[in-house]
Image 1 (tube, rainbow, N blue to C red):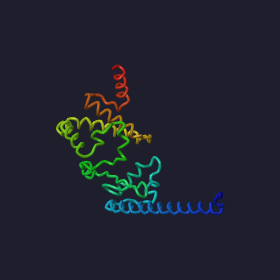
Image 2: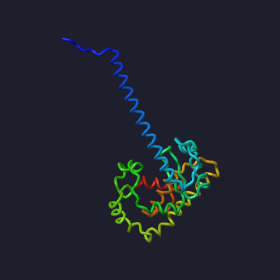
Image 3: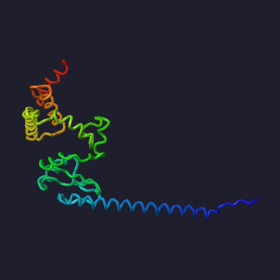
Image 4: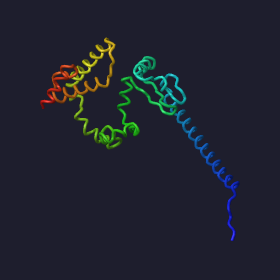
Length: 224
């Protein structure tokens, strides 16, 4: 009886051959992925060519231009230089078209194109699949049911209340800016939104954006 044993040389040769095949396959996959990213970037460049934008890095896009806590200032410069809309490259193959012209926004918001699943899917566990996340025929059915409640004639009496809340928020901003104070707009916008809802839905008379008004609102909440 004889036993066949692979010699160390043949074993190393087999392992080396497998490594070479794996390396070639990896190289081919990397080349295919690079070609895919290149073709996608060319397609995106063609799609947004009508909207001028600052020069972007082929890989990092405009990320290096937006320093921490300076995004708003950078966008203000873009708005002054590039009216209506401007592409913002996040990476070499990802671009976001930033629209800030009212007429452009009216066209965009008036369309019923499918929503970007990647941008909205994180909301589904919180709010479910309602009007904000739906598409297609189901979206049209929900929209048709809600349209009478948001008819222009119904909303007209609330326009003045909304404008008053926004005007008070802007007055607070001007005061804080004149004092060179730090301004975190998200908190102010949330408070303005809450005040608008309380005025329109609950007939709240006083403003809660002032310190005294906010204290009265908290006291009323605790008493209730």
